[in-house]
Amino acid sequence: MAGKAAGKPPEEILLDWKREQASLKARVVDLDTEAWQRDPAFSGLQRVGGVDVSFVKDDSGSACASLVVLSYPELEVLYEDCRMVTLTAPYVSGFLAFRELPFLVDAVQQLRQREPCLMPQVLFVDGNGVLHHRGFGVACHLGVLTDLPCIGVAKKLLQVDGLENNALHKEKIQLLKAGGDSFPLMGGSGTILGRALRSHDHSTKPLYVSVGHKISLEAAVRLTHSCCKFRIPEPVRQADIRSRDYIRRTQEVQGVPAPQSGRSKEAQRPKACPQGVSEEPAAMYHTACGNLSSLTRDGTHAPCNGNEES
Image (tube, rainbow, N blue to C red; front, side, top):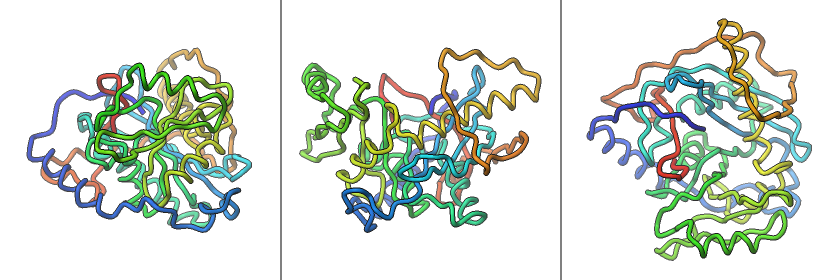
């Protein structure tokens, strides 16, 4: 998830967003709620989902929102939904959900209506959960609005509640010797906000895992490691691959030269892959009631000051 739009919402909108975060935060469950979460081998877990929003190069107003569902433990793609969206709201640090989430909530609701048998039992989100300025990041927001277990997985440390990417933190990272090794992220308040996880034997950069909704931190960390063929959990990785590929195909249809990428990622093609390329523009940004409970569609996000903020 990346991309920044200019401008800033009026102060009253920011206050509305803060109030909504505070209200929905009370509904977050940070304990295991499903039997499979308490099983050492996650017996009973059959489908894991991932979401991502990728942005069109040199166009901060256009993006592709994607939802994928994979089988577990095989991690084969069962379903994908990619759609082009128009972004109108600016990015504001700590309010990623109000820019990207309406598209993702809508994708989950569409799947629930059309293919309920393919609904994921847990969602991975490229962003933070309770590891957040106000304890309610995009993974919490998505979990509460969809009523699904959610896990926040960030690639960079969000420096909140006294957490710092300082020398001591880097020393702890060096002690992560094998895939699955982790250490707690304890804030200045004494609260454990997440864990830094070495997700793969061949990856030296940790992931920052935090609870989104309806799962414990311990189960979230174990499942994240279990879903990593590479550094990034496969559900998020596939959502990213497919959203970027959808942008490329859309640009080809529109006659726009696709940007060359130095990365080569193999993407599986599921039978459920949507046919053709279509664009679904989002509704305009609502300055009077930009809350997610009403599923108003608005905007994008970009890292700020070296942090992945959500």
